[in-house]
Each structure stands twice: as C-alpha cells, then as structure tokens.
Length: 179
Image (cartoon, rainbow, N blue to C red):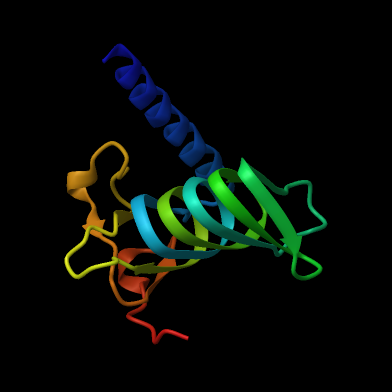
C-alpha cells in the first residue's frame, strides 16, 4: 500500500512539474491525459509528451529536427524503422516514451495506452473496443489526471474525434471523418 501511495504521489508531482515546465514555455498550453487506452491516440503538438504503451506501435515525426530535443523510447522486443527523414516507427511491448519540448506528430496505436501531454496543437482519439461495450480507456482534455482520478474522465470515443489542444474549450473543433 505504501508503494502504491508513493507511486501516486511521485506521478502527481512529476505531472505538476511537467505541466509547470510546459506552462512556462507556452502560456496557453493545454493538457491531455489518457489512461488504459485501446485504439489510436494521435497528437500533433508543440510541447511535451510522456507515455507508456503495453503493446503496439508508436510513430514519431519530429517537426523540429534542428532543435536540441528528440524522442526517447525504450521497451521490450523494441524495433525501430526509419520511415522518412524525420519519422521513426517503433514496435514492441512495454514501450515507454518521452518527447520534451519541440514539435512532434505522435501516433500511438495499440493497447495499454497511458499518455500525459502538455502543449498546443491537435489531438485525435479513437477507442477501439474488441467487443461492443468493452472499456477502451478514458481521457481528459484540460482537466483531470486520469491516472489519479479516472472517475472524472470521459470514455475514449469509439469513432475518431478531433480536438484542438491548448486553446480555450470554446475553440475546440468537432468530430472528424476517419481516413
């Protein structure tokens, strides 16, 4: 029980520090929290992303390759394939990733998606339950930390849904057609 409490406190402190760093750099920074996700989470942002992926693929495009920031990815059975001059596709199990500062397009596809992001840009969420009614995870935009307070988070949409990330809630866009 003490270990769980320590992990929760450490995670909350890290998120607060993480949000503080991005907030200092970007006055209108938004936050995204995804917990237990199954499906696809796509981020196209200027900011920072921390996350885990139990099983699946992570595609990272660095929009600012000349800066001092880069993607850091580790995991079991990790393979990486360069699919473009600024894009790398990672596959594996137990992936952990970090992209601090800079601009990125990150596409996370699989099961066990846990993501915390701070910045400005666009997020597309698409939960993919295997059977009707199955839990495909929860998310929060500019709100609760789903790892700490999942009851305050909304279920991942089962159809692709796109949101503007960072500006006020009134500037969010509506549903987008899957491609």
